[in-house]
Length: 389
Image (cartoon, rainbow, N blue to C red):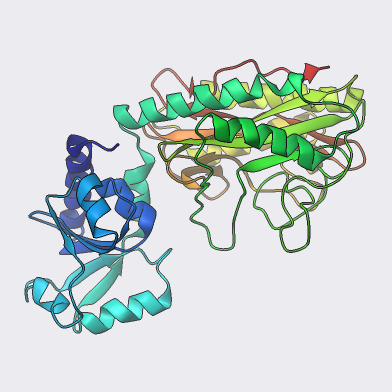
């Protein structure tokens, strides 16, 4: 559980940012944001003034929130008539997370607090959350170790002729038994993920909505992502790309398996992916510019003659090579074109150079790393090699 000291440090960082932007306080309604600052995910609204003590107002369950919350002033959510009285006339500018707040909820709070200016603090919030404390890094190391333990079991149950969905079920069964929580929270609108995906060459190249290199066919057009009923064949790469979610914290990793041997072009793609990962990890240091790391990765793919296959099927390429992870799968920072932001110590990033070869399959690697002065620190610590069975 979140410690009171950890909660207080997070609130203090937020208050410092609010004061620097001349914002009188922040109102959080998005569950994972509330959890980040308070330690409880109960249905609540959190008010953090720029100065003074925060207030957590709980709709349900108040009794559980009282047990879990690190906020001293945790109370039931007031009536609509009482709510405005909690905000004095000095409160004129209120921070709100426009990136995730539904318009309906914005209108509700704007009506309760007339005459106030609501200011978007989405970037402030995401920047704060991107830098992980020592406590958070410990949670993520634990998530990485537990997820790696499941990956090590794959050779015992991956068989030629089994369906992708059966492979996924075997992996997910073990992950759940190990305590995996399964909630893969994503902030971006229109993105969703069911724990991960296990796909083979039969479907791995299929394009889809998911903002990543590989989508998979899924089980229907209503859930067009992940494993399908396709059969796994010999001499083709099998991608297993899963998240490990423990105590709320996510790590993301991918390993490849083959029953037999890989095509030489896929072997070349894998070698290039490893070279790209090694370069990015070596330079995963405070001050490095996210865009520049992506552009170097893309240049390495181009030099290998694989630019059209990098991070997606030709014409369907994703425009990043790494994404922040933490309580959500798509946190800041992003190693992408246009993200001209310097890395900070303690940020955690999933690096995933992958190549898609239509008709042959997908190959690559993914690991989660922490930014440090010595380069990336691996949180999903197991060998990167393709496992041949």
